[in-house]
Length: 218
Ligand code: FE
Image 1 (tube, rainbow, N blue to C red):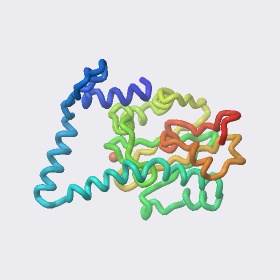
Image 2 (cartoon, rainbow, N blue to C red; image 1 turned 90 degrees about the vertical axis):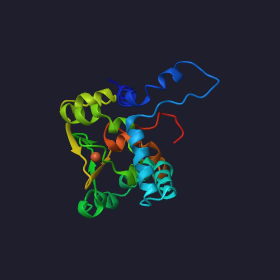
Image 3 (tube, protein in one colour; image 1 turned 135 degrees about the vertical axis):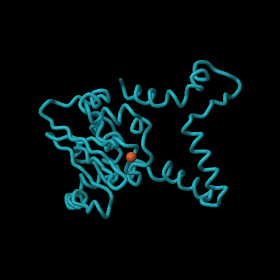
Image 4 (cartoon, helix red, strand yellow; image 1 turned 60 degrees about the vertical axis):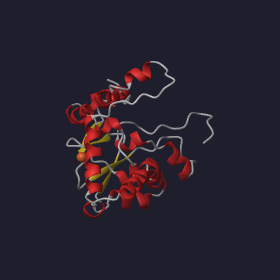
């Protein structure tokens, strides 16, 4: 299964009503039937708003913030700074996890970290924004632990047998950020240019950061 497969599998139940709309063009809008989960969330939200326990505008502001303001770019800046500044990297890797609720784990040529939440979808929102659909999918959550190498291969990352793979299971208390290996050939890049190379997937550990194509404007 490819990453797309994970997404499709995870989303299939939720979007079964949209396949039809995607197959051919219409000059009218289709109203897809929302998934059970979406309905449950809507029902819960309505109830909480009705009882005056939450403010709908505050909820919208929160979701908007994580969707548009906080995203993987925060994490990418952290990674780029860690690559560029050894003292910062040292601090990042030795954060007090109880205080920060975040542990940064460093990939090396011999050790590769990958992050999952087997229970639900715990994810370091503050540095990576909202989790991708595949991260929340049952196949990723179960298989990342049972067969991490197989899962990584499906993401296009085929690790040599002598590279140890370590899987970190996130919890409500502790989230993980993978500090990917800095790619060769990036010695002259600025922090901003480095940050632009760092992908969300690399910070979850399902991809590596690759160097910019030769001749590409950095
Ligand atoms: Fe979780």
